[in-house]
Image (tube, rainbow, N blue to C red; front, side, top):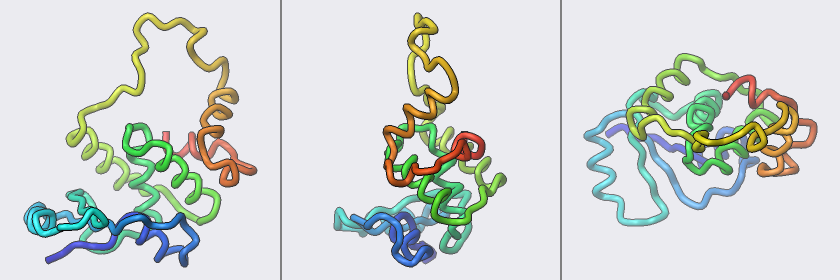
Length: 161
């Protein structure tokens, strides 16, 4: 049976426990049969199991974890935590986005959750939007961990969006 450590415990393992504390243990598999067996046998709320078919059959690298986070950054999947995690990777690690995996993951999220719209633009005027790129970036950084955003640049927007 092939399933692998995933999520914040894996990230902590890869960065020597310098990431945020883990509240649970996550596992991932790319095999639907393995997923079904594990999912049905997990009897604790402290363990989560994920099925993501486009991931490799091994523990992910730091670059792959970063790519996974970026791939769902525009979705409402724990958005604030995801954006904070992305900034952690960009500021405190030397990561590179895997464009091939990113494309595969975006396709997976679209199939899994259908394309999502973050807001309803119908009937909105220009007054409802940010007046420029800097005010948009500033507003988003206010939502993120302020310590992680010291000396931030627009790398988040260049790579992930």
